[in-house]
Amino acid sequence: MVVNASVRVALKAILIGIAVMVWSLLPGSATEAEACALHSSAPPMTMNGAHDQEQEKEGDQEAHQQEGSPAEEARESGFRGGFLRATGVHGSLRFGEGDAGRADLEESQMMIQGGISIGRALRVMASLPLARRSLDLPDGSYQRLQGAGDLGLEVQFALSEFVATGSTSVELMAGTLLPTGSLVRQSNGEWYHPDVQLGAGVVAPRAGVALGFELVRGLHMHLGVDGIWAPPSPDGVQRSATLRGESRFRWSPVQKLGLDLGLGLRHQGVSRSDGEVEMTTGGTLLALDSMLRWHPLSKWTLEAGANLPLWQGLRGGQRESIRLQVGVGMRF
Image (cartoon, rainbow, N blue to C red; front, top):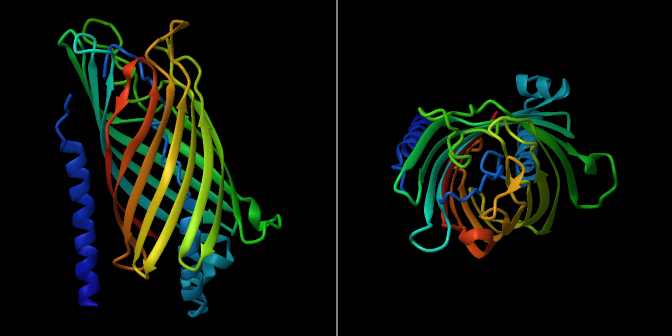
């Protein structure tokens, strides 16, 4: 009991440390170019549902061993638990051709996510990014903003609970980003650059589908695709619609340790400013995504990983850097 209490205190300290680390990362140094992407405000396109359902099954088994317990009564009433997760990400993006026309965008972001499961098929989730963005422009000027971004709401529905799909889990997802992140003007009255703004200023719908299945004991494969789109914002910019696809292997070599390894494909449409196409927006990115997960306690998870661009077919000289990620999560 003393050991568990100590571990819980350590986990809380780690969570606070992650938040401080991400928030205090110094902004470094993308162009007058317009990346204007929506995906930085959207929650990660991963098979979280399938992963958490596996852990929920373990929770079900524990609850059934304690009939009459509050956990068991809650499950009988429809509530099957939930999760909270905080993930810090740091990365940068370069725009433009040559030193004279190059600009650099750097972002440190903490994504806060939470969700509850209702019955065996329905999951309701919410997400909120806390970001710090820095943009150094070719003329030597710079822009800095930090704060909360757009609130994400999402519903996942496990179709495989009602349709015979064999051993394959099938999840449908629908959601939206709400304009809770403020659009900010500079002191001269002009809007901040779209890539620095914390929100899009409009409602942005999102939808997707995910598949998951077990290849062999301890090795799962997940496939998924989602898309997000937004109308023109009050600042006159229509940010790039984004289509994301993912193929991921999840391996648990031992009980408390897990390794994720996958490929992510992201295609962005062009952005428009006052109806005109921004020439340095849009393109396709293929990246290798890796994540190491550790479960020090049955309801806690610590994770660390990296996203490495393998191929960048992005317009206007856009180049993304390696993105580093750390996080902590808990189930309840």
